[in-house]
Length: 285
Image 1 (cartoon, rainbow, N blue to C red):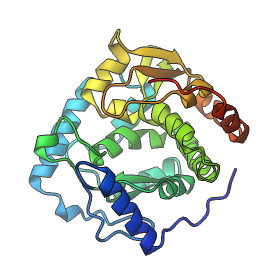
Image 2 (cartoon, rainbow, N blue to C red):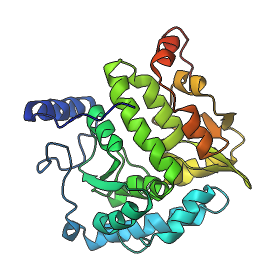
Image 3 (cartoon, rainbow, N blue to C red):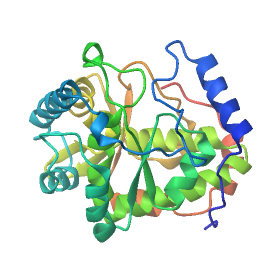
C-alpha cells in the first residue's frame, strides 16, 4: 500500500478549487467555507442547529428508518440499532468515541465538497468527512449536494463494520495513487457502484449497503425491488467500465456476495488494470 502524504492545500489552491466548483455548479456552493482549515475541516458548532433543522433531521430519519426492513443489509441495520440519533442531529465527538473503539475511525466535519486528493487523504488516515449543514424544508425530498443526513445516515453505520472500514481506507490509499496515474474516473466508478450504490446478497435476499440508496426513499425501493432495475453480480472490470447517472435512479446495480468479496477483489494493485481499461470501451449506465 502507499503511504498517505500530506495533502493539505495551500490557500491559493483552496481558493482555486472553490472557484472552479462554484463556476461549474448551477446552484453554487451550499456549505460555509469561510472558517475552513487547510485540511478542509471545520468545527461542528452544534449550537447553530435550529429547532427547525432538528425537526427536519427527525422527519428524515423517521421516514427512512421505516423503509429499511427487508431492504437494508443486516450489517447496516445492526449498526443503526446500536446508534442513538433518531431524535437529534448527531454530535460527531460522541460518535467518534464509539467509532474509535469499534474500528479506529473518526468523523471529521467538513463544509461540503472536497478536492479529490483531500478526500482520499482523509480516508487513507481513517477519517471520514461528514458535511455539517442540513437541507432546507423545501429540499426535503431532493438535494443537489450531499448534506449531513446523507453523509451520516447513509455512511456512518457501516463504518462500524471492520470490513467496510478497511475497504474505505484501502480506497483512500488507492485514490491517492490513481490521482498520480490519471485514472480517477475508474476509481470514481468503483466508489459509486459500491459505497454509494452497492447491493449485497444477504441470506434473506439482495439488500442495500450503498449510502446513496440507504438515504433515499425512492432509490431504496427502486434498487432492491423494482423490476426495471438491472442487478448484476459484481465484476470489477465491468464496474470500472460503466458510467453512472447523477440525476436519476441508477439503471444497473452491482451485487457483491459479501463484504469480504468486495475487499478481496479490490485489494490487488490496480496499475495494470488501469492500463487494460484504457483499451476497453466505456459502457453506458
